[in-house]
Length: 460
Image (cartoon, rainbow, N blue to C red; front, side, top):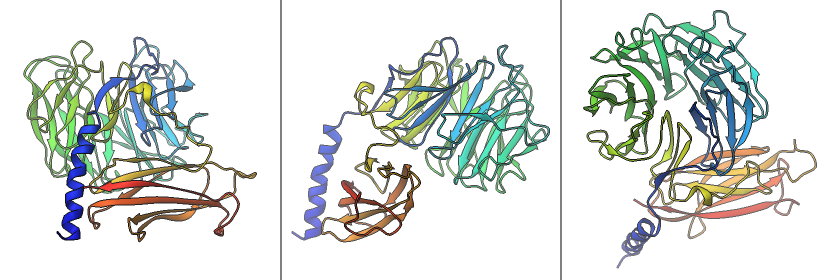
């Protein structure tokens, strides 16, 4: 038998082990998540499987650094209704206020709050452009410095952007395309979509999908739904080509959603339920496996065939946002925080944002095909926290040959992620190795040098 056939045979024998020795992922509520009483958690953002933030209608922002095992309140102002939140990295983030008029207790007129220290402090950052919207409903970041937002439900429709990490903002009146906008999603800094409604919410409204290819300077209508009494609510793209948009109806049936298989160029309406259901959140772990939620009295529904059929999956109340990492890990927020994983929430390891040493925190997924994400963290360990570290993150095969350099650069304290693409590699076991030392050009025996490694399994 050839070496290649022997290797593939061994890998084939390993696959059932990985499939059957690990429990199948399920949704569970996190018992330590904040209790928001009569309100709900409107949005969440997770930079890694362990680091995330949530925002709610009581004007609160909470952070977890251990995958939902514990939460720390970072902001609390009940005159604000936080509808959406995003982070560019572990330090810089933005949370948007729905504004006044929508809910009686929301009296704050600032619409964007920003943090530059991981949420420890927040400040209003929206008084630098004239004619600001009354509120914002959806926000996203891409490529480090681009921040895009839209609003709001029941109007008026505006698009807001920053191309310099929140230092300056611009806004565009979108009333020519929609009466209100509720969510946005960008594939690149240039190209993205926004969704909303064409008329007054309720009986006179249809859902609308808009597209831009020039950072929001110009827009075109890609799709308008065929019925009245509905509006687009949330966007979810499990891949670049396949995407979904939820359609909310306050009453009436059937209930539908939108799907694209060509990256948002064309859309089709697909039936979710033949009976009434108050849809809000939609999320997919893959192109075929996903969930719809939002109703306060009926269970969440699941699909395993890309939305052709749906069945009850009794988890989650008032689910408004899904944030999925892959087909075995994700989060959803509504009445509380829900986690999709193979492990119990009480078993989540407590990894602080900045551990006591350099650590390969996680590799997910593993096994993988053909891409996986490697997360590592840096903690000083030197007298001057501004001292840079030389970081080398390399991948080797089992013969000790270097097959890819993922990082060879200067880093300071923080948590970082890098993607490893094994498309050009053969199936098999690989080793990812992290080497870190203080100073720009450390020698092999420099004091404080740290090394660690972890196995990766590429299965095709």
